[in-house]
Length: 179
Image 1 (cartoon, helix red, strand yellow):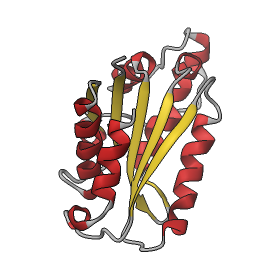
Image 2 (image 1 turned 180 degrees about the vertical axis):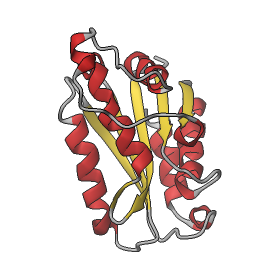
Image 3 (image 1 turned 60 degrees about the vertical axis):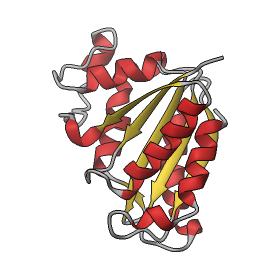
Image 4 (image 1 turned 45 degrees about the vertical axis):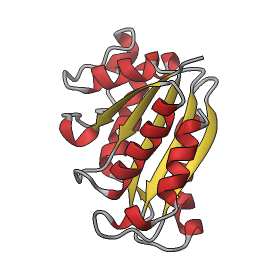
């Protein structure tokens, strides 16, 4: 059965390493007959959460009028969510963290989703990326029915394009096929 997959790419760099892995995941998922949409956060205007709780008083509608409402709507309607980020100082980038924080407005409706994580870093030791994965797990542990299905570790990728020579490219494709 075809699934609706949403890939959220946090890379601020067009054609960066995490974005390249997103493309490979998407190719595998599409080859397996799924519908894939990718949101590039660098193309969106998403402000920080104000911690005003306005969304809780407004039926889940944030007081900020920006692109997050659209992203949140896509998250709610997806069957599968892929979250991809470059790793900065052993954690996710600010773009991804902002989306996670802003999901608060409608997190009760982001339920029963399968999650995949894609992380890239210049670091060569996969274990050093676990802090980033724990950040994603912290987020998904707050969602009803969230299930972690897989992770792609794009290690040893500093300059844009370094990931092309990595086994992570094939890992991303195969993980996409397995959805």
